Each structure stands twice: as C-alpha cells, then as structure tokens.
Length: 133
Image (cartoon, rainbow, N blue to C red; front, side):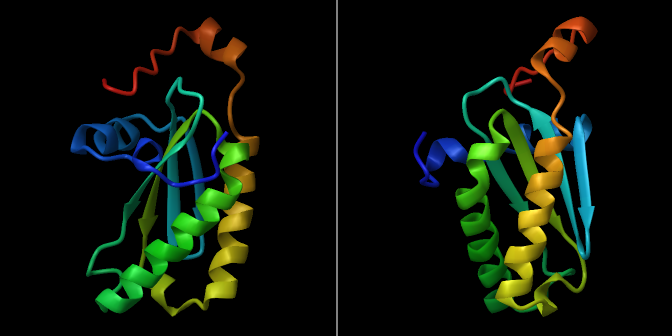
C-alpha cells in the first residue's frame, strides 16, 4: 500500500462527511479533539478534517494542525485500513505543540484501530457500508 496522501485517501464531498457524521461505527475522543469513523469497504482509509475558526482562531494554527494530523495519518494508515475518518477539532487543540499532537494522534489512531469490528460481525448485522450512501 502506498504511504502517500493522494486524492483517493481524502474525504472530498459533503456527502462523504455526512455519511460519517450520521452513522459513525467508531469513536475516539481525545483532549480537544474527536475522531469519528465509519467502515468504507475499501482497501485504504480516508481522512477528513473539520477545524473551524471557532475552535482554532488563527489560520496559521489551523494550517499547522492540518499538516500535523495529515502526517500522523499518513504514517499510521496501515493500521486504519477500511475506515473513513473525520477529525473534529475543539477549543485548545491549537495550543498543543507538534510533539504533543503527534503523541496524542498516535494514541487515537491505535484506539480507533482496536475498535474496528471484524468483517464477520458486519456480515451478521447486515451493515451496509457503501461509501457513497
């Protein structure tokens, strides 16, 4: 699997974001951040970021956060196969240093990977995970 962060590894449309917000099958709350995830039936994971002005005032800080989160995701994506993930920033996230961010997201990715239900469980419950729903 490619370790890059190309277009196929991103949530791009409002519909894709809405699918994750409406029916997340995994959650990982952290300090000043919330990760929502949903199965996507693909051989790779996809990432979407929600970092608003209300939670992080300065655009410089928002952009730094986006870069750090994308890099952390890129390095950990092998453990996250099959998820559509939305990262929702809360107040205080912009105050963290880069090393703290990397450490926190490392833990969040691991927690999310552990909470992934098996394919067999999905078949039993009849869950429809169409990424374009």
